[in-house]
Amino acid sequence: MTLEEIRERTYKPRDAWWTVLLVDPVASRLVRLVAPHRRITPNMLTVLATVIGLAAAGCFAMQTRWWLVAGALLFHVSFIVDCMDGKIARLNGTGSIFGAWFDFVFDRIRVFICALALFGGQYLRTDRETYLWLLAVVVFLDLFRYLNGSQITKVRAEMREKIEEVRPVRAEAEAAEPVPAGQVSRKRQAGDFLRNHRIRTHLFSGIEYEMTVFIIAPLTGWLISVTVAAGFLLMAFEAWLVLKLWQAAQAFPAKLAAAEAEAEAAYIPHPN
Image (cartoon, rainbow, N blue to C red; front, side, top):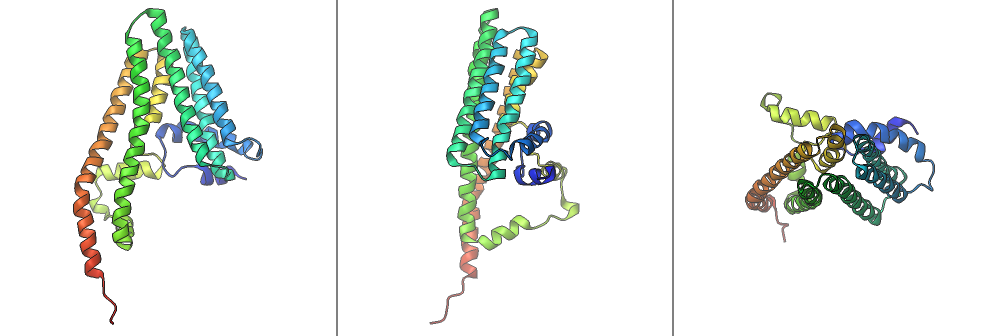
């Protein structure tokens, strides 16, 4: 199987920019090596990613400058392996509902242990309570991001399904309707550029947050400032997503009523 075939079959249509630019180019090549060995399952890769993540936590716990750098590099390697499990599952058709749960839970365990080692170790070394607050905030924001993201996706899907049940043909036509070139805004152009390169418009998601806290912060040595900045960026993007959801929910009753009225107008009863 060629590398291009692996990309076509394993790449997500949209993904975080960190994954697209810094992970996929490496992960796809590793998948090409691993995929023929069917005994290597996605769950095994999840466990391996967790083990490497624990090694990163061990480095973070040492607290010296170069141990922090080593921990950051190992955390990135752990994330690459973690991305491989989904690609192997899609490529070999070995994905499962349990595997999705397994991957999610072990990711959260890895983040918690790395946060405990990184910020707890700094607290023990410096006796500054700021690191304990950062530990609590990092764990909270990691859980909040994925909980909030899953609920937003669920609510949007429910609204979309209700409208499509009323007018499925029109909904598909509207989704595919092109926008005249002269009417495309700069915001739309930027969004189209990102989507064409598989990058989500949600530029600071949970993935970028984790990578900033556990890679960029240890590499730079600016643990407090970088972690605080990452937290503000994540909450800003999450607030933007909630605002968009609120706007969609406010407009939903009118859209649903219009769809029902259109469906009734288009209905032609059969003659008796």
